[in-house]
Length: 191
Image (cartoon, rainbow, N blue to C red):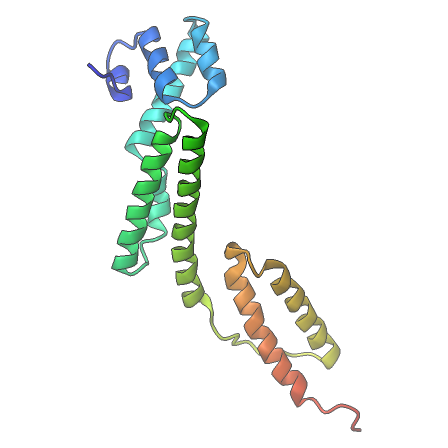
């Protein structure tokens, strides 16, 4: 009979059975070593805490929060994201049970590729929704506006490939277009 974490938590919680279960499912090598020393009040508490955490991950995947932020996507994209997350999570769970380093490396690359696809879907949606006209009035003399223009250019140059900053980069690019129009309308050298 295959014992699950839930079964162990609901049973008499035999220390060595729980330690073997954590040895198989857990990822903390330091805790695995500590559990192999034998049962004590301290190690029993650590084992119980670790297996409860494993159970909570199984019952309430942390990706539920991640899925929540994708709820605003169109239904087709949302289904695609959920499917990709399930595929990624399945690969993650199998990753540590693969025998060879090259197999683990191959799976890790696939996981990273899937994560990038998920992020691209989210950021593409964010960019389309949040790029808006800069609707406040830009005021100031030519020097202040030129300084703002150069500051925005530096920011955009620095973060142009950073997906997390893409919304702000696009906002600043739009602001720069408005500043350039204002600067073009200035009359220079006329009294």
